[in-house]
Image (cartoon, chains in turn green, purple, orange, blue):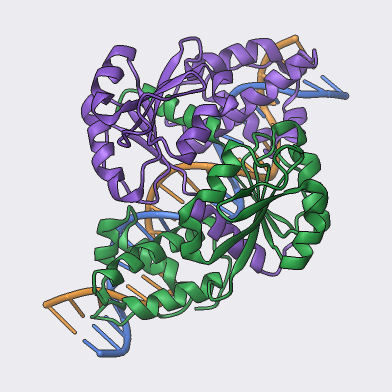
Length: 211
Length: 211
DNA sequence: ACGTGTGAACCGATTCACAGCA
DNA sequence: TGCTGTGAATCGGTTCACACGT
């Protein structure tokens, strides 16, 4: 009932629930049980109920959950009602893919700018997003009240640039560079490390299969 | 000592250790203690020792670990000595970024082809990687003995295509599509869900900071 | 009877603490 | 003494089991 110590994994699942529920709503399903969710997602029904229970009693015993109100609850938890301005730092291939990625807008994220040091790129516009000089980060972060950044610069410069982002007031960084960033506790950091994922996969698929 | 039940998280860290150790070797450091590793990576020294202990006694008490032999051990664990052929399925922006991503070759991954259904893209060559019709997956997977695939197709088609990959004999899928894929147990699956990561980050950075 | 909400039991992973070897 | 390797203790997250509301 009280909003206590919710783990990152729970939050990640909450986002999955939201996506799933929206899909249900589109199919005009408006009541759902934890078992039905557990069938479509890869999550046990108890897990689903427990995850939600951190945020209150959102279902009806003997009935299930109203899809529309549950969606609203989840949206509230994530603060989706207000647009979240983000930036992409590093306008390489990966940055370009992120700028074009359609999945962000479902959650009310808006990419307000991309940044690079390469003079040849600065000034271009990708999908309506302008590429700016890295020197302009501070201005733009302040002007658009940007809280989050996706970092897609080369590993060598990632630490320096991340520190610059922190100085500008960025509160969370999604880091794609394969380095361990050292940042103050007050800044949230999540890493997406594709080579590591692939290595893990290689290891897993090389073992004698259980199943 | 015995190779028992190693968790995914351990494997993921092992890959980080490998990267870190290689960096040390480049700086001509050839002896390292678990504490030194723990300072650079974000992992406790006990964790590091325990992770390695699953694979034998690789260090020397009172001294530390030899960087070069430890690297070789890790490479062995991951099977890095033999080239691992992979494919990219879905030649959109993200697929293009993956094809160009330099971080894979450090671990002896080789992207042998990309696939798409779009006739306009088929036949093009990106970074030396040819874009093929999806119909040719089976041929190419067999010809190049491909074990792993990165899946960057739209969410709607991901399940179908994933099943096709499994039929071709793919043993592991790194899935970038925002859906829960339903696959046989014998196939390893890891998801990279950028929107979910960003949602988690938004949640974390919105909370009162601990730190 | 049905399905939620939740304390209790369980399980796995991390951390502690120390024995053992250089 | 210094640092590894590892059982034991701890911690946190998942699953179980059931009371409760509809």
